[in-house]
Length: 286
Image 1 (cartoon, rainbow, N blue to C red):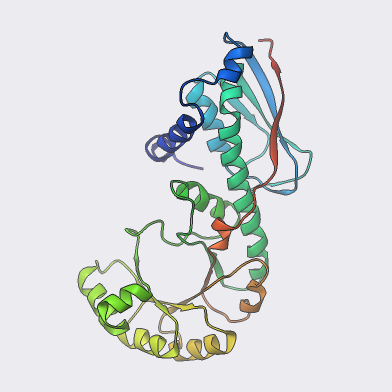
Image 2 (cartoon, rainbow, N blue to C red):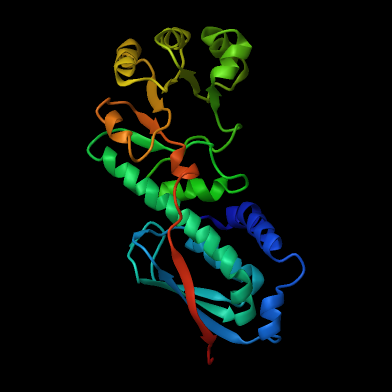
């Protein structure tokens, strides 16, 4: 759950921006059929099995439009839900429910889809010590929601942004003149409390990263035999992350390597939405 400070400072502006995208002047359809305030209630229904996520954001959409509205939650983020299940009831001004419905569902469907997909990928790592990580391959202005959803699905968050840690990728290494040079420059510039991760595409880069004292070595787009050789070279002297087009369909080949982390951009850029509907809106007698 997002804490109150994060909600107010970081989440509210993003939701308001999304609402402004959908309501540039007025919600003309709603104003046609509901010219005056009237209390109402609508039912949130799951239309396929999955993991629910984003309920706090879903509710916030309506409270930003109508501070008297509230959502009666019957499930919690991270819960397994099934087709046909009633998950919540939205109470408030009918106009706010109508105007906020699409934005609220967009967040909830997207976040639930990511949590569901992540949960499916995590299941392949059961019985191992390897942790599943997300990446920065997120939808612009939606990273905080998408990374939250990964965590709700049982995954772990890699760095949130470029200020969150040192990761020396191919172009950083090229700009510095080599792996050893890049690591030396990072150690000189970055605070000692920051770990230094190096993306390696060859065994020679792995050797250089180990000798330079990298804290984490990412094995990027290597085949299994090359990764096994790289793991032998590292020999416990750095944490190991495996990356490169990892999806639900192919992660099984990596599960026996014994690495510390497997990262997957697919968790956020390729997860389908979870089908959810807001139905049966009617006037509520209070």
